[in-house]
Image (cartoon, rainbow, N blue to C red; front, side, top):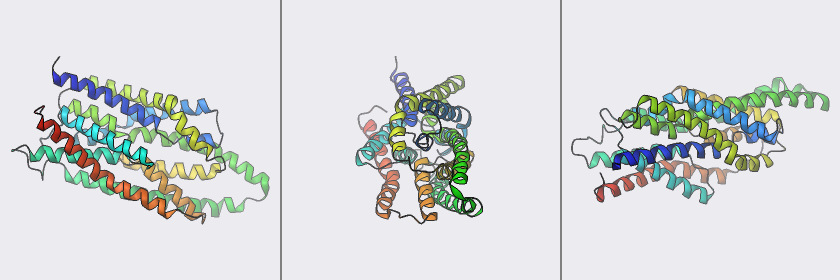
Length: 340
C-alpha cells in the first residue's frame, strides 16, 4: 500500500476520533441535567441525536470553509498538510487541558492551518504567501471570534433584563414562581436541543478534514458524505459514552441554577452559533457560553472574576499564534526528512 493511501486512512481515523472527542467534551447538556428536567440517559440520547443531526445535515458550509474556501486560489491540502494541522491542534489542546484552560479547538485548527500554509508557500517557489490563503475569509473568521462572545454577552444581558422586567418581576408568591420555573424547564429543554443542533453544525474540524480529502481527490463524494454520517454517529457516541462524565461534573455545580437562567444562556448562545454557522464561520461555543454567563451575571449584579477571565482571554488570543507556530514546525519537520 502506498504511503499516501496509508496517510488518508490515518486522517480518516483521526477525523472520526475527533468527532468522538467533540461529543466527549460537549458541556451543553449540563444545564438540562443540573435542572433535573429529564432522566440522565434520556438527556444524553436527546442531546447526542441533536448534535449528530446538526453535524450530518447542517455542517456543510463551515466544513467547506475550513476544508477548501480558506485556502487561496489554486491551493489544495496535501495529506501531510492535514496531518500537520491535526497533530499541532491536538498538542496545543492537550497542553491547554493540563493547564486547566478551556481552549478552542476551532481557534487551534484555524491557527494550525495558517502556520502550515505559510510554511508551504515559503518553501514552494511557485506559491505566493500573500495569496496562499484567502485572507478575506480568514479575517472574517478571526473577527467573528471576537464579535460572537461580545454579542453573546449583550444578547444575554438584554434578554434577561427584558424577561425580568416584563415577566419575572411581576410574579407574586412561591406558587407563581414555581409554576413559572416549571414552564421554563420545558423551554430549557427546547433551547438545549436547539443549541446541540448548532454545536454539531459548527463543529468544523472533523468535517473540514473530509471535505479537504474530497477536494484534493483522495475521497469520492460518496465516501466523503459517508464519513460525515459516521462523524455524526461518533459525536453521538462521544456524548453518550464519554461526555456523561463532563456533563455530570458540571451539572453537580449547577443544581442551584434556575431553569429560566439556563434557558436565557442556552437560547442566547445557540442563536449566536446558528447565525455564525449559516454564515459559514466556525466559532468557539465555549467562549460564547462564558460570555453569556458573564452577561447574565452582570444583569443580576453578581460578582465577576475578572482575573480568571483575563487569564482565559490571554490563552484564547495566544491559541491562534501558538497553534500556527506548532503547525508550521511540524510541516517543516516533514519537509526536512524528505517525506514530502
